[in-house]
Image 1 (cartoon, one colour):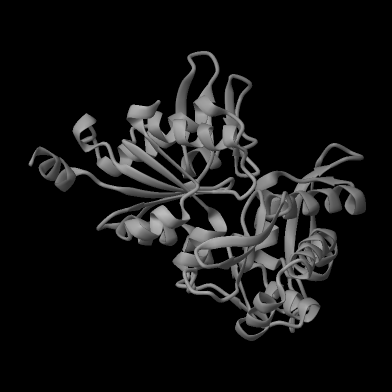
Image 2 (tube, rainbow, N blue to C red; image 1 turned 180 degrees about the horizontal axis):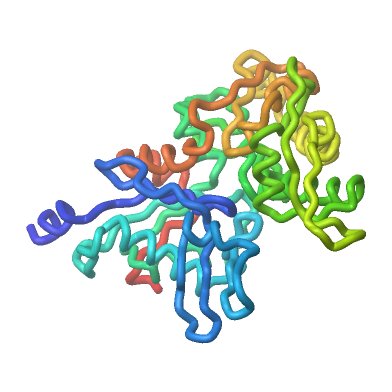
Length: 349
């Protein structure tokens, strides 16, 4: 009786704990949080100054005593304490100050494929310490496939490539399990780094992380576009030390990204090479699905299609595919138990 009353007030959550962005789905309400996984900390007082969008505005602009950081690297928690504080902030924001021990939510979290047991426990502990009563970890490609309504429970080959901020996850799914997979540390953040390196090598220009990301979003592409695009790139001249602006075009950005894109395509082909023939036949017929923020890079579907000779489609709203998958799993406990890799309750800590 009491459990039923508490469950009515409890807001179960689905979390996509990403390197670049954290998205939180609230059961019955939809996606409430979609903010960068960035935290600003005052090192003098150890206080959290800002989280999410507000903290991202501070990147590269803080005095020495304010430390702005991404607590996740390559989908893995690199700073446990800051990750915990970030999640606590988001969960309290969801509950709008009404949070207490009686309303501790059940949480489904999307996590990278290649996490070790220790890393999975770190994710679970961070979510539990942030206020969850129960944590279920689901691999991101599986959650993305479910969120994109792929028939993961059927005996057919489902091929998904999730290009996130820190990792690209490549998986072949059948009968609620991942048959073959690869996970590489080349994704959105690496694309930004490629642009920064290109600016340094070709133009003697030091550009910041946010500037590189902006260029990628505005004019980045994987294949030649019908219209030429240009965009101003601003930074510090390495020779004079003074501010400088140059115009960079889409062909130059494409050249900067080419090595990373080639690595992603090569790993997709390598995954296909070790996939059982029956599943490859299904994939040839059904095609490949792209999810994650990297799927928004212009022409990336065409690049992969030319290299693999299989149809490629981009998921509807690829940025939210994983968190939408967690929302479906919150409603379908049978499927959740089939696909979860690490369930943990607060009473087992």
